[in-house]
Image 1 (tube, rainbow over the protein chains, first blue to last red):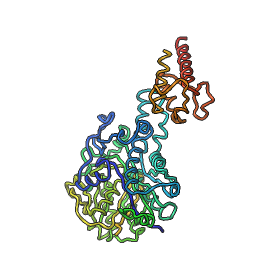
Image 2: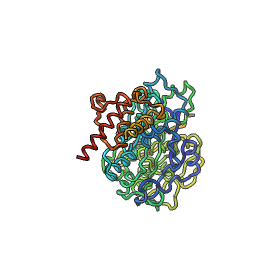
Image 3: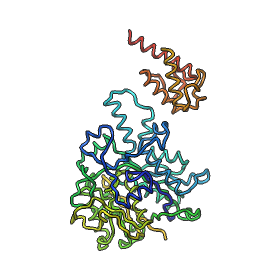
Image 4: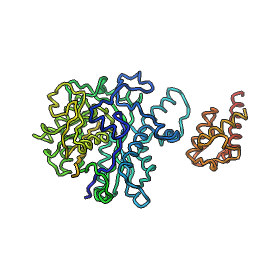
Length: 403
Length: 92
């Protein structure tokens, strides 16, 4: 089985327009969540989100391109550009079949759907722009990345709600491990911050109107964010032979289904995915220094996640550092696992654990080391990144520092 | 009106082809302007929007239509014809 390493990084979120800005924000414990501003946002009961307010599409794309790219595709292309230029790989006729694109998203072109439903239902228009279908489809981002960089290997999108990105990166890992491809452009993107997108979430009544406060006794729900993170996963020998910078090794992955409830999480299901990732990586709980938690800030998730960690980690649960960076960037839904892997890579490469901000009061149900409010200097060799989705779908990745 | 239809169509075509209107002549074909099948579908949409008309056009078989897209001139004529027809229907 081939070893797989990360050789390129790219991201855009409310914490920054590129990976360096996002690293800085994570280290500072800066909050990227603020007032939501878009058409009809005043009619929402939820008024906050991790929206990228300084994003200007015309800085990145031509008018023709923006007509064809939904925002989730734009974010993916921006992150992919950073990842590809940072990894220094050249895609040529010789290696193009060995390069895959596997991305996660939950809502896909939701902005495009929202805008055009508004046109035909509210404004009574009888025709829509001809490119709506290729713009809104869930695989649009993956396809445009493939087209732009001439990546002719396997290309597809995984939509499994909040686990989409971890599932996608898990598939990329497995394709390279097995030898089907040498390189994968993988991660995820999401852009649900529009009237219809948030209105639907309001219905569930699990959104906070104040702030995202994971693991805090005062937490009152999740807050959404938008953006993308994309990585270059590469076969280890391939990366080594071309002298690539290696940010981490992807050493384990596991997925499981609760098979229980469509929204409520299960301790057992999550614990099985955590333990599965350790087994796949041939690690013991004591080896793990840091877990980037799913940590949505809902009562149910955080309590269940802590119970799952205790269950899987036994005595070591008290020692492992856990943080939820959703407190800063919000919940990117189908893109969240990708953006959260950025925190794991930061921890491994710069020995800094990004904090769980907005933490005020201890909750006995979440009584673990949640790295409250301030980033911590600590060397990190091994990390896990948890994603647990609606529908009971759990996907956990393990990263290792390559020494 | 005839002048306006032509000017508007040239403007739409030029925008799609990333040209200035003065680079588009009556004899220009879509192909010579570098407009592909996807661009053509966008042009049909823009013309429909601009004149509030419906153009008989099926992208599966772009040539099998009374709407002649062989040159700028033919498109202008076809659009004028559709506008006239719909005006007659409205007056009838």
